[in-house]
Length: 347
Image 1 (cartoon, rainbow, N blue to C red):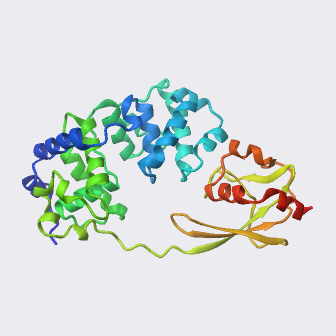
Image 2: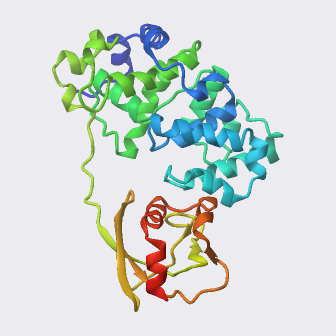
């Protein structure tokens, strides 16, 4: 396998031809009706891009619309209580993104007079705004030249040039960014960046790619060599361990006892059933499983008294649970519990 240089890639597919092909295809076949594309507002781009991290477009759309109804601008979000922000994020997972978005809004209000800047050097100073989000804001909101790389773009480049770099190995990321920077044009950046993402998401898919519909087919080394299925390369991942978890279900006619979690670790700052290190005295009534990026949680829920009455513990009536940010598996569990039956058991 040959490791191509930028010069070799340029000979295979000149930058001007690449950009022209992507822009033309996007205009005719790309996604142009997504809600965050309409206003071309940098705040809309910021919100959508953080939501889209680790989450598919179809899932994000209703959350995005609901978010803008409650937090229509940076100022409103910056002034909102954290708990309300987390409650509006629940169901999207990866809750650190919500905290980063909230912190970003506060920084933009405090340091930039509530106006999201265009300069990359300033965008990088905003919490939660990494290289990809910098490129997205500059491209989509300002139509300015900016490289953009995500999983879809990596896969597209990997097949197009038969790259040996592993897409899930962070030391290799610099190669993909270097390629993206080379091929980023000076004009039509909004459509070009969207085209890269659209080609990866809808044509150069992980499984069963639609090579017959790809405008880059004639320049694609993997297609020419019948090696599309061999790319992108991936570093073998370690087996994810399973950890036991124990949660307390302290329930009464007045509601369920919840504990606000630490701002660090899993489910930061969310309200949750109290968690203990070892199985307590009580009845083991429920179970649930949840997969995090670095381990699988096999949880048991114990019907018992938690013996906590002070903050950060509160008792929340069942009807008020929607007002609190809860981890998705905890919310799902609480919605399936036969409350009257359990309360009678406790009594």
